[in-house]
Length: 265
Image (cartoon, rainbow, N blue to C red; front, side):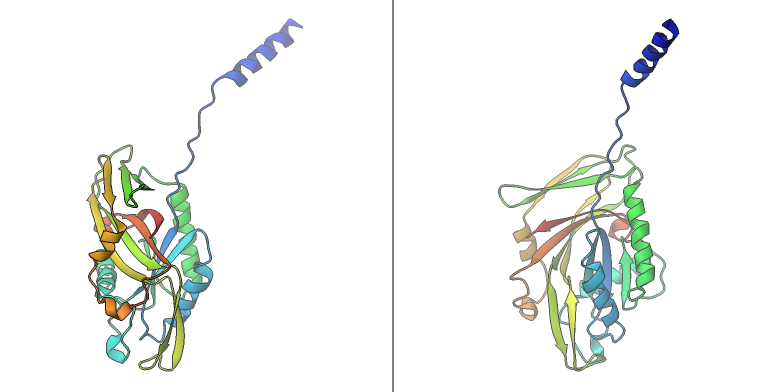
């Protein structure tokens, strides 16, 4: 009888010991899929459709269409293209040792470089990026809050090891909608093509080494006013459905993306 009582007491002792708290994995945001595309590219419509269909309707990814201008000479000027997007794609290629750029190209989370119409490869890449997000290394993080003034406040928390890295905090403005365009010349002549989530502009907000706390406030209206592009070519596109995505990216802004969050304009 005493042996039984002692056994119960020992068992209760272990049960009542403080249990270690398991930290919840931090939500590092949706997986960013950058599609480099062009209205003048006859190989691009399947990738455009893939982005606007399956990818756009997933809740774990944020697909964004970056229209490039290097096919404009074929006869049709892409009204969604910006030279800055072409530069971004070329800088990616240079930083990752790629010999050239092409369309349609998808870059998943700043890591994988894939043919945009290769749906199986893209799906596998997204799954791999999600696995990395759910088991992150010792990485810094961001918190974005909306202030009563309408501005946004970005707060950065260093990693535990405070490892120094060349982080860039970007904001992309995109249209959370579809843009239907009838193309009259070039490789896609006489076709009407729908483009989803087109990016309007990209702006670097800050550089951060990730070794100390970061805090800065930004006005979305002022950011938009200081963007360089020809507004007349995009008249009416900015009235509705504008959204932003804030991205924390390594490699001077062209390496792996480690944090994303969306903001309403």
